[in-house]
Amino acid sequence: MEQTTVLLADDEETLRKNLAQVLREEGFDVITCSDGAEALRALKNGAVDVLITDLRMPGVSGMELIDHAARLSPEAIILVITAFGEVETAVEAMKKGAKEYICKPLIFDEVIFKLKRLVAHDDLAKENKQLREHIRQTHQRVAFVGQSAASAAIRDTIERISHTMSNVLVCGESGTGKEVVSRVLHYSGVTKDRPFVPVNCGGLAESLVESELFGYRRGAFTGADTDRTGYFEAADGGTLFLDEIGNLPMSSQSVLLRAIEEKAIIRVGDNRSRPVNIRIAAATNRDLERAIEAGEFREDLYFRLNVIRITVPPLRERRDDIPLLIDHFLRKYNDELKCACPGFTPEAVETLSQQPWRGNVRELENVIERALIFSSGREIGPDDLAITLGSEANSSAYSVVLRAATHEFERQHITKVLASMGNNKLATAEALGIGLSSLYRKMEELGISKVPSGGSRS
Image 1 (cartoon, rainbow, N blue to C red):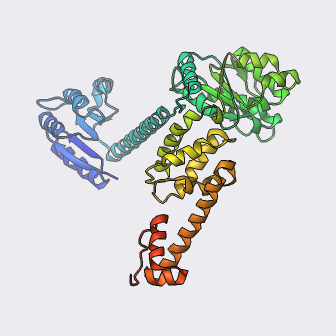
Image 2: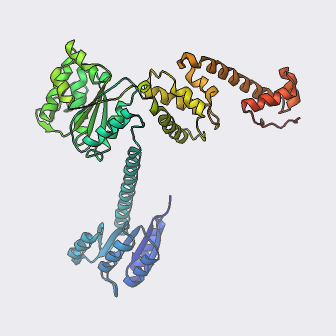
């Protein structure tokens, strides 16, 4: 960790020297100045982390130095040293940006305590800022990828409603990207700086729905040892993403409806109503109209959720999106897996484009990830997809899959024999029962490079 640089400005020599020695013993890098003009020159020479300055100095005063520091080292922590009767002046200095004041005569332990506390707080604030920036940049990369007419229509709808807090019902088969659509909506408009809170309704126990959604007060039930904020409050000002809304029990649908209508919740065990301002993005792969007819979903809740409806088509109905999705996941997993895969051949892209994709985009993503794991940094061709597609390939790809599996076995087997023979090609060919020229042809065909070994070579 880098040392914290402290600029200490005080015209009292004894105080300055003693305080500087104590600071250095505590691990700080200290620059000392005997007056304000010297301190100003030091500020101009480079940014500092901390400025400790007396308010009364000849030439440039402590107050003036604070003004200069705000321009030259805007992130510096400023502490002022003042006489006991000049507290009002110290308060004025704090209005200018000083974080703390210390009265003379100085107690060095107090100075060190206050300084370390301020530095720790500043470090935490910087970490939080960096984290927020990382989250912001990550969310900016969230996108609904595709060039099909259906994908363009979805993006257009998102753009039209992103400035509102209207509820949205996102429909589509499992794996089509309903949560991605909801996140893109959230980070595209008025809710972008507020929380996005995902909830799997299918995973909520019926007896716990209210306490999970609305929270509870301490002592509300056995095990409620502290107050707990529910999902609604956690999402205040932002988006509550209710996944698998069609699986929410009927008894729980009524309490959800009440909260949506009243825009307020009551924690379990409490009697105080708490207002919430949220957008609900509910996702389902069920036909809710049929569920209503079957008495399995409340019609009034359906209308509250279905203010805006976005239907995400299955991947087999938007095959034009597949090449872009392949490129998107290629970049994602090259980064996450630290791969250097240059991409997929046109034939591989065509093979992937012809798959049935019963698992939709989620299945395609899994296939791309597995392909990169086994790629060894090479361009991925149709034969390489055998490991990833397996039984998922359609009948037109079975021959490709079988050939790829055979090639993969040959590649692994020849590589092992080469290593065991010290990379001696002649000995390897004899062990395999083939001619030397056949071995060279096989190695070129299978993309086998020289196997590291200390043995002889032919």
